[in-house]
Length: 337
Length: 288
Image 1 (tube, rainbow over the protein chains, first blue to last red):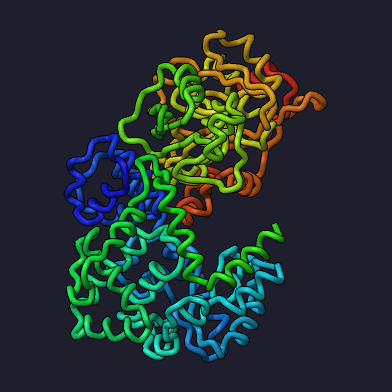
Image 2: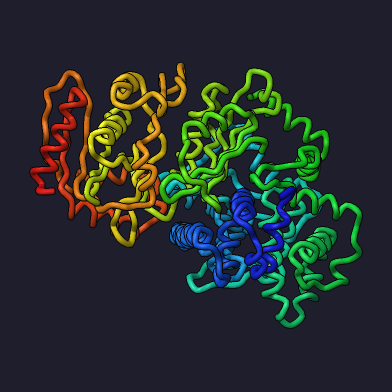
């Protein structure tokens, strides 16, 4: 296997698993683990007849995903208890939100830190309440702290001293220095309450957040999983009346139309996601580079195409900061290390 | 990867790949006679820490499906140890089908003795010695507890002998079963020993655990056998398990059942033959 295409095709078409030989299974499992998609794959293949060894491996992955889900929801509950007295809206983001809302994007998904979005004006109280409830700063360094507070879309990360779990408190969607300026206030305003009083983003905003995360922030590492999230959400939400119209409106509002188009084209290409052709727009030459970057992994789970990876890495910094600021930032970092 | 080998150890299949010939060749020789799995549970990669370290002062990074970001690389002559550590790492971080106990185990008549203790306690050497004295060697590093049956599954990888234990075992086992001398490793001098053919042939055969031992090798103390309270056994076994927390309530139930049903003893010994005598005496006393 020269790239992650086998993983992508099986996620899309589970019955094709019947044709794999043992060597391909071994490669597929290594690649799925490297892309943090092993739980998702296990969930997709749950109804397909598989060799006994494979079934045992995937059963373990489903068990691990279930445990991760339980832990993530417990961590959200811990944050809820700490923040409930403030009376401010607490919006769950990413994996924890998918799990809490029971979305198909959450099935088998790995979940890392707890990500929440709160109104920017509530940040000081939220910070204080979390510190009082046992969360502590991870980065003690004054420059890092200042950098986060001045330029980033989130507080410096906090970790709970007893449970050893990290929380990222966002007040908007992208770094303040990035090009697009998504409307976080509108996102919070249109968020929806779930049973326990916590909130999740509305369908269109939830897709837009995943799009922003994948194409306007970061170097596409773990991109296959993020694109899979987008695929699952689009399939689930598309049945809603006016979903595509709403999505178009939100993309405009958050200044992420180009990124949405790219996400739709790549999801359609890799996962055969049904998408609105007008929103997806015309294929661009650079789509091929994104596709190659997403698939840049061999059958041993090793990243390939190091030059292309480097380009996307540089792009990720470029998007976050203007050149002079980037230079100053890297200079500070270099001086410290 | 350029060089690769598939290895079955007990119920677990490994694929070990390397950018150098040496580590895989050494592994192939040491693990002669082991079955080859079809689908592998885990992949281990031995690759240069930086691209140029493949040729220039070769440095073997231990990578694979599961990675410890701060794991120190090893020198190329210690590639066999890197492979062993890589396989252990996959088990410690990735194994979720069994409760994984950092313990050695031996079997007789379908019944198993589980031996656990800190590094350097001698549990590995004791299992190796019992394996040459009428017991079936089941493993020197991990014992796999089956959640459904309560049985122990073997994990009979090559025994990792350190320092003095190498000389002790050289008197008991034929030289063709030994791997190369690995001198100056982070763990001292190491030599691997392939288990007896019977242990390899019966690697798929589980056994019912009947006794838990906490061996302690110390030249300075007189030999002694003490009972250990259930609460202490429980806590020590949770500490000896790498996946106890990750598996949640299931592991609590399985471990509780094990600890309540089995007798436990701490044994202090100062030489191998007295340790074997003590284990045999306990075995007879328990009516096994």
